[in-house]
Amino acid sequence: MPLPLDQLEAEAARMEREVAKLVAEGHLNSARRLAEEAVAVRAFVEARRGDTLPSSNRRGNQEAMVTAERLRHSEGTGKERDPLVKAANAAGYTLRSLGEALKVTHSFLSQARRGKPIRRDLAEQIEKLTGFKASKRNWPGLKG
Image 1 (tube, helix red, strand yellow):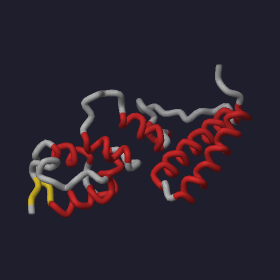
Image 2 (cartoon, rainbow, N blue to C red):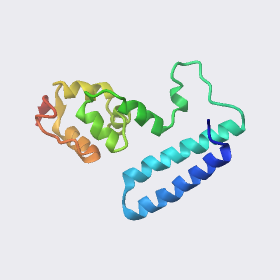
Image 3 (cartoon, helix red, strand yellow):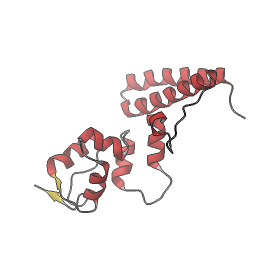
Protein backbone atom coordinates (compact mmCIF):
# COMPACT_ATOMS: atom_id res chain seq x y z
CA MET A 1 0.00 0.00 0.00
CA PRO A 2 1.48 3.38 -0.97
CA LEU A 3 2.42 5.86 1.70
CA PRO A 4 0.18 8.91 2.18
CA LEU A 5 1.52 12.08 0.56
CA ASP A 6 2.03 13.77 3.95
CA GLN A 7 4.25 10.89 5.03
CA LEU A 8 6.23 11.11 1.80
CA GLU A 9 6.68 14.84 2.31
CA ALA A 10 7.91 14.25 5.87
CA GLU A 11 10.36 11.65 4.53
CA ALA A 12 11.69 14.16 1.97
CA ALA A 13 12.23 16.68 4.78
CA ARG A 14 14.08 14.04 6.83
CA MET A 15 16.25 13.24 3.81
CA GLU A 16 17.09 16.93 3.36
CA ARG A 17 18.17 17.18 7.02
CA GLU A 18 20.35 14.12 6.53
CA VAL A 19 21.91 15.75 3.45
CA ALA A 20 22.96 18.72 5.57
CA LYS A 21 24.63 16.34 8.05
CA LEU A 22 26.42 14.46 5.28
CA VAL A 23 27.73 17.70 3.76
CA ALA A 24 28.97 18.86 7.17
CA GLU A 25 30.81 15.54 7.57
CA GLY A 26 32.35 15.83 4.09
CA HIS A 27 30.45 12.94 2.46
CA LEU A 28 29.64 14.90 -0.68
CA ASN A 29 28.84 12.02 -3.05
CA SER A 30 26.42 10.46 -0.58
CA ALA A 31 24.90 13.87 0.09
CA ARG A 32 24.40 14.51 -3.63
CA ARG A 33 22.71 11.13 -4.14
CA LEU A 34 20.43 11.59 -1.14
CA ALA A 35 19.55 15.14 -2.23
CA GLU A 36 18.56 13.82 -5.65
CA GLU A 37 16.35 11.21 -4.00
CA ALA A 38 14.71 13.92 -1.88
CA VAL A 39 14.06 16.00 -5.00
CA ALA A 40 12.51 12.95 -6.67
CA VAL A 41 10.21 12.34 -3.69
CA ARG A 42 9.15 16.00 -3.59
CA ALA A 43 8.51 16.02 -7.35
CA PHE A 44 6.40 12.88 -7.01
CA VAL A 45 4.36 14.43 -4.19
CA GLU A 46 3.81 17.65 -6.16
CA ALA A 47 2.79 15.71 -9.25
CA ARG A 48 0.33 13.59 -7.25
CA ARG A 49 -1.15 16.60 -5.50
CA GLY A 50 -1.74 18.18 -8.88
CA ASP A 51 -3.04 14.82 -10.15
CA THR A 52 -0.68 15.05 -13.10
CA LEU A 53 2.28 12.88 -13.84
CA PRO A 54 4.79 13.75 -16.53
CA SER A 55 3.62 12.51 -19.89
CA SER A 56 5.60 11.80 -22.99
CA ASN A 57 4.96 10.36 -26.37
CA ARG A 58 8.51 8.95 -26.32
CA ARG A 59 9.24 5.61 -24.80
CA GLY A 60 11.10 5.92 -21.52
CA ASN A 61 10.11 9.52 -20.73
CA GLN A 62 13.78 10.49 -20.37
CA GLU A 63 13.19 14.22 -19.91
CA ALA A 64 11.14 13.57 -16.79
CA MET A 65 13.65 11.16 -15.27
CA VAL A 66 15.38 12.43 -12.16
CA THR A 67 19.13 11.93 -11.91
CA ALA A 68 18.69 9.37 -9.15
CA GLU A 69 16.48 7.30 -11.46
CA ARG A 70 19.04 7.54 -14.24
CA LEU A 71 21.72 6.23 -11.88
CA ARG A 72 19.50 3.33 -10.84
CA HIS A 73 18.91 2.44 -14.49
CA SER A 74 22.63 2.74 -15.23
CA GLU A 75 23.52 0.50 -12.29
CA GLY A 76 21.24 -2.21 -13.64
CA THR A 77 21.14 -5.71 -12.25
CA GLY A 78 23.70 -7.53 -14.40
CA LYS A 79 26.63 -9.22 -12.70
CA GLU A 80 29.04 -8.43 -15.53
CA ARG A 81 28.98 -4.65 -15.32
CA ASP A 82 31.91 -2.73 -16.73
CA PRO A 83 34.23 -1.46 -13.96
CA LEU A 84 34.14 1.99 -15.59
CA VAL A 85 30.35 2.09 -15.22
CA LYS A 86 30.66 0.92 -11.60
CA ALA A 87 33.20 3.66 -10.84
CA ALA A 88 31.11 6.29 -12.63
CA ASN A 89 27.97 5.26 -10.73
CA ALA A 90 29.83 5.36 -7.41
CA ALA A 91 30.90 8.93 -8.24
CA GLY A 92 27.32 9.92 -9.11
CA TYR A 93 27.59 9.69 -12.91
CA THR A 94 26.04 7.55 -15.58
CA LEU A 95 28.23 6.76 -18.58
CA ARG A 96 26.25 9.35 -20.56
CA SER A 97 26.59 12.10 -17.91
CA LEU A 98 30.31 11.31 -17.55
CA GLY A 99 30.69 11.69 -21.31
CA GLU A 100 28.83 15.00 -21.19
CA ALA A 101 31.09 16.24 -18.39
CA LEU A 102 34.14 15.36 -20.51
CA LYS A 103 32.64 16.64 -23.79
CA VAL A 104 32.80 13.18 -25.44
CA THR A 105 30.09 10.69 -26.31
CA HIS A 106 29.21 7.80 -24.04
CA SER A 107 29.77 5.44 -26.98
CA PHE A 108 33.35 6.74 -27.29
CA LEU A 109 33.96 5.82 -23.64
CA SER A 110 32.62 2.30 -24.23
CA GLN A 111 34.71 1.88 -27.37
CA ALA A 112 37.82 3.15 -25.61
CA ARG A 113 37.32 0.48 -22.95
CA ARG A 114 37.43 -2.09 -25.76
CA GLY A 115 40.63 -0.78 -27.38
CA LYS A 116 39.77 2.37 -29.33
CA PRO A 117 42.59 4.92 -28.91
CA ILE A 118 42.11 7.39 -26.04
CA ARG A 119 44.37 10.30 -25.04
CA ARG A 120 46.14 9.98 -21.70
CA ASP A 121 44.90 13.42 -20.54
CA LEU A 122 41.29 12.30 -21.09
CA ALA A 123 41.88 9.05 -19.18
CA GLU A 124 43.42 11.11 -16.36
CA GLN A 125 40.36 13.40 -16.28
CA ILE A 126 38.17 10.30 -15.96
CA GLU A 127 40.39 9.08 -13.13
CA LYS A 128 40.04 12.44 -11.37
CA LEU A 129 36.23 12.36 -11.66
CA THR A 130 35.59 8.67 -10.93
CA GLY A 131 38.72 7.11 -9.46
CA PHE A 132 38.94 4.71 -12.46
CA LYS A 133 42.70 4.37 -13.03
CA ALA A 134 44.24 5.75 -16.22
CA SER A 135 46.25 2.59 -16.94
CA LYS A 136 46.91 0.49 -20.03
CA ARG A 137 45.04 -2.36 -18.34
CA ASN A 138 41.84 -0.27 -18.04
CA TRP A 139 42.28 1.53 -21.37
CA PRO A 140 43.84 -0.86 -23.95
CA GLY A 141 44.12 1.94 -26.54
CA LEU A 142 45.79 4.44 -24.19
CA LYS A 143 48.08 6.83 -26.09
CA GLY A 144 50.78 9.14 -24.77
